[in-house]
Length: 308
Image 1 (tube, rainbow, N blue to C red):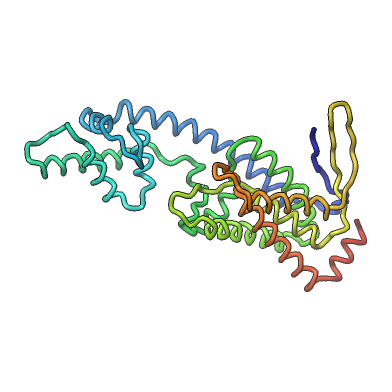
Image 2 (image 1 turned 90 degrees about the vertical axis):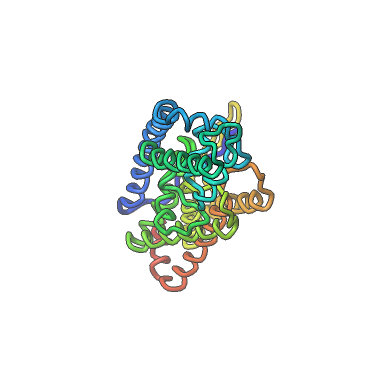
């Protein structure tokens, strides 16, 4: 069975070029992510097999840390993300047992720490972070730049296509209704609010970084529903040999989507990587902005509603 809302039953009287631009940037960004991932995997393998010296490789073969794991890739990847590198380097050096380079224990420990430290410096130079890692928002850092850049990055083709279809359906109409400037402000506000909400919901250093346009897409859906609740959306339904196209009020689609995400947020699978907090907070932001539009520009919304 397949149920898929795919188009608003509204005539666009101008080209939503900013919405289109966002979609193009997302596609271009994901293509760059794929290239970056291939280069990263290649550099990582080459560094760990060819650019580490014999002593460091022997040390890394012994380290089997509960937090860092074992092997060159795991140790340096986790060490790179550590907030206290020096403390972790001392911890890892202390785990290299049965392999002594100097008779003096302190001198031997300093050598092991220096070797791991130098290896990390070389690792950072030879294996730069993946583009996805650079663009992603980390909930413990409150970085406004990555709050914005993370919305353009995605984890897979299905993630990208699903978000772009959903985003374009609603954002194109929001842009035409509010204009480029207001649309841009709404987009950035949704990106920031959804990121802050995610940070407040997890607050842990080891929480997963966030990427994707879904929080903003939910916000655009809620915003459009608030300013044009009587608009209708075309849907496609398929079940075995039965196909049908029909329209539903956008209010029904929004209530279904938001309610579904609220339920998933309250019954979240601990192993799920879906950021339901961003979805729900994006929807709340869209509703608040929609109420503000109805309050401050009622005549403009009446004109738009009369044209639909």
